[in-house]
Image (cartoon, rainbow, N blue to C red):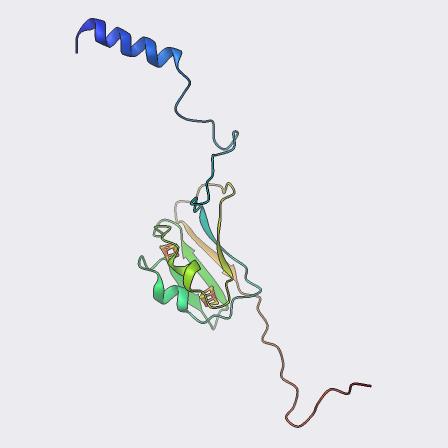
Length: 128
Ligand code: SF4
Ligand code: SF4
């Protein structure tokens, strides 16, 4: 690169708008294809384990005993497979800003879903 070409490039860069934004102070540009990060509605998760089985990165771990759903943010490759396969649609991609993951990266969420109690067999609700 000649001195003239280098000066031209430097001047063009100085005078043009920055290619980056001051995220998160400035909102990031999102499209319909933006993915974000996996989020769960713990009140609807039935602990079926489908998301754990379908995750290609082994980023999700379900514990039926502890009633927890956990995700390792450093393993997740944001492929959307868990979101697509969850039978109750309680997983979704959140495109809002989230703080950077900690050094461990594992997020544990307590599942709060309560299975509805079936009425005893033979009893029907009175219609008044
Ligand atoms: S988005 Fe993909 S990699 Fe990330 S947790 Fe879901 S299935 Fe796993
Ligand atoms: S998040 Fe969905 S797929 Fe995963 S265990 Fe809960 S209900 Fe099943």
